[in-house]
Length: 530
Picture 1 (cartoon, rainbow, N blue to C red):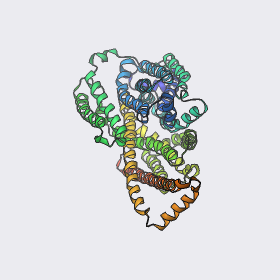
Picture 2 (cartoon, helix red, strand yellow):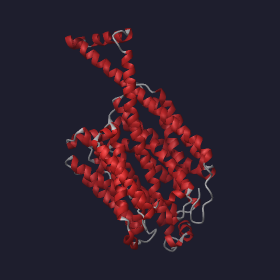
Picture 3 (cartoon, rainbow, N blue to C red):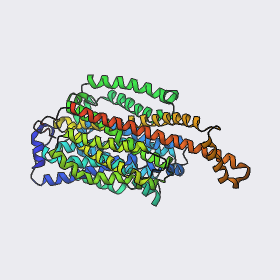
């Protein structure tokens, strides 16, 4: 019995083994939970390609509309590490029922929002409540399934965790184009009800422990919320607001620092800390979390860069962006069984070397980017990205969580998922800052070349003036404006190439670091293996 083996290995953390029919039931219950996690992760990116439509529908400003994303991410990043404590208190069953039910309710509220203020509040609640589903699924996978089942289970949760944000813009673009932006949220209702009901009826992995509420670290929760919430805001808004020159960013950076000091103090001093950081003492968990951080940069950074290039340089609609981005999602879906098969036979360090090597090759190919690149030029790099994501995720999951005892996995799963999200937040902040700075630099250099003394520049200007001669006296002004836009677009394309080059160096650096990581030790009984 697969489920019984996992239970017997660590009986104090799980209920006693039950009769044979439980195995199939628990497996079905687990896959219902995986579907819930898919919805929660999908909702991070599903609105990204349709923000303009939501902005128009809610009569919001360009500064306000970014909070549709930011509020969700800030709330989710607070819940992810908190979920380990809550699932021990409430049990996996009730934790997931509340998370999926609340997520579904807030999806309804988002769809019925009539102004941007309502939308921001509902999105924050949606991210906070729904964020509990993500680490709970990871923890359950490594608690109820024995090591020999991991080559099947790990690729599935890896596929969901990486595929959902990848296809988010695609699905969002289709829904908005075919129906309206309201369907970005309405699409969650029927699946959400199904997941909530099935989890309530089928999940029985553990029992609640309400005694933990007596020593619940409320001060630690406050410090953690201040630390992670402020950090997410600073990383999201800093690049677009000149960092500490913006008053709100500066104040929240100070709040973040104070919150971090209080959080780490409580984490080591509280009787029952809100997050148990001792999981990082496990070398495999520390290594897996570190690679998960970089995986977050690759996952969320590239999911951000492609649509920005296609929208700002190529002028693609949300639907066209979604169709172009679908290549990575399709590749990951096809690679999932391959990744599972390789995880049975291959050293996980070699798998990660292949995965990050594919990442590096894909980003290196895009360093030759021009303003004319479209679907076919981006086709192979996107395939390499899909291969890299899938082949990396499985061994990273197994290295991080596969050797921990079951009673520590719930807490560790929250920390592990947090590192991926923080990696994405840090990656986006660095990418945005680099794009802004390098665009300014390239613009300055190009302007030095495009002068009245340049024969090439004058020939281009004259040709443009002839094209606009129908405008009469405004022809020259229109030609100068068009030429200025051409220079600005070229500077932007060159800055994209610079960012892709930096990502190539990052991924190659990880490949070079892999020989220094020890092969994961054999798991203790009940702890899991790789």
